Length: 107
Image 1 (cartoon, helix red, strand yellow):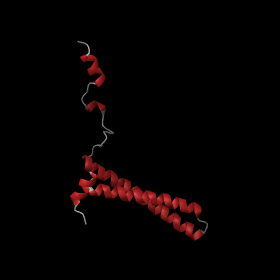
Image 2: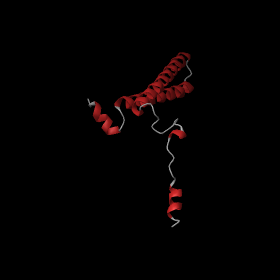
Image 3: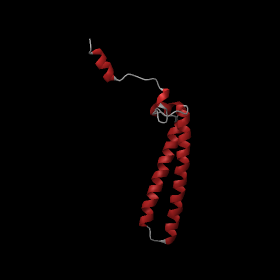
Image 4: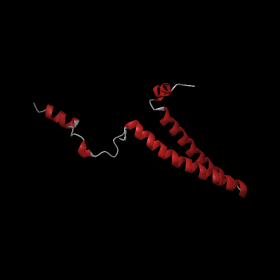
């Protein structure tokens, strides 16, 4: 059994977040597999089973997406790690590299 800090050092992601991502991935993969198997099945009872499995996987994936949002909110303090959803007016204006080159070349 690995300790909690060791996994974070290896992946750069909290264990809890990694775990949710993994379960979400497998639920989505399971739903995709169920869809494939449904197309192949001909027996009514087996089709019913596969349809229930598909619904279960989709439900689990939906819950996983919500859990992932919660984990990512913890990881980033409620802010997007990529700056999504942040207003441009709150950031300080920065000069572009082009304008810096232009001003330095006018000696």
